Image 1 (cartoon, rainbow, N blue to C red):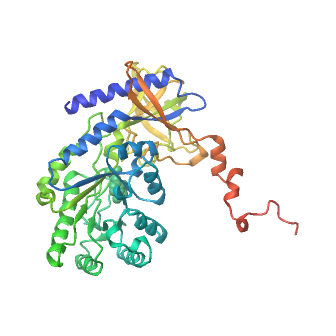
Image 2 (image 1 turned 180 degrees about the horizontal axis):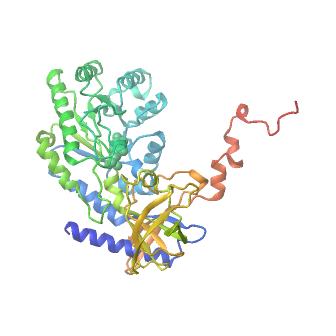
Image 3 (image 1 turned 135 degrees about the vertical axis):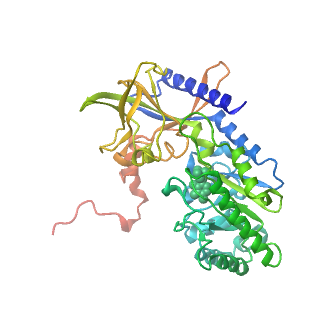
Length: 463
Ligand SMILES: *Cc1c(COP(=O)(O)O)cnc(C)c1O
């Protein structure tokens, strides 16, 4: 299948899933919002990634960046397909282990790892990328402690994150290789190179370099320039140090996603081609490679459905009040220019509306005026009972909800073509219940977790 046929097939699967969700009444008063993940699309994305690097003589570990879609059943699909997992917090590490990733297929990249987090990872045999020189010193201390961490043979790859300082993409907040980025050790600062080389001389266990140029908005050339900088640094370290020191390179993720239509562009194949052109030595087998893609593996495999609860005219403007707002589309609501989403209008039966379009505002359910998914958007007229579809929300949207206004985390369903020509929907995450919501807010069931000294007296004694 070429790119256009693939996009067409994905759109047909999506349309069928919307109709099936409507038929089964999944979007209703008690659950007016839900997320959906295309399981066949996920497999297709994984195959595309694997094929793009298949010609390489290097061993490649493709890890999935858990934060892009941190649902254990989705992580399990990646684990079962033989991929690894990139975790960036103790929670993501726990989710990765629960999903069945072997520790040696996990990479830990948290920016501010505590000693406990580092010790846990090292004892498990999880690869760690240190963010800075202070963290390297901590790792060195932990490796000297008695216990399994002290066994050199069992040591996982240990790396240092380098900021190649190649500059920003189109979204500042997503660009991690800028002059002043908070991530990694700066390569171009005065004395930066020398400090990194010295770290490799000082710590014999250090054997990997890591970079991640940015997420969304970074052109392929910018990412490839960052990779080239770090590759050249590895060559320099290996030329200066006795014996080969840098044995693997972790290239990070960051392949941008096309949110404008159904095409997958750029593809993993295009990215690998740009890498080959910029850094030919990368694929000759001397370095093990790690990738950490997130958004590009999942964004286009998910959509969100929300019911339109009301529609009204305000100051000669049409506004649809829906159940999808900043709680599931936080970036879109707060940075609408950087993160616009395609929206679709469906009737209550899940059929795309073909009525004439009209310019309208699409609002979410939260109690602040700026909770708008789109303003002045041209769409078939949204009316109460209709379904609003948010495209390309498989990464960082319904899986990374915001708790404002105590709205429940929505249910997420996986969908797959079924034998009878219909669609099979599987619950991947139930909607948060009101009881759970109350408990997480410190309500009754949470109280036993407090230690005795922390429990506040129910009533203050009279003065
Ligand atoms: C977020 C992140 C990724 C994944 O980025 P995507 O843009 O989703 O591919 C990979 N590596 C690191 C270190 C990250 O912080």
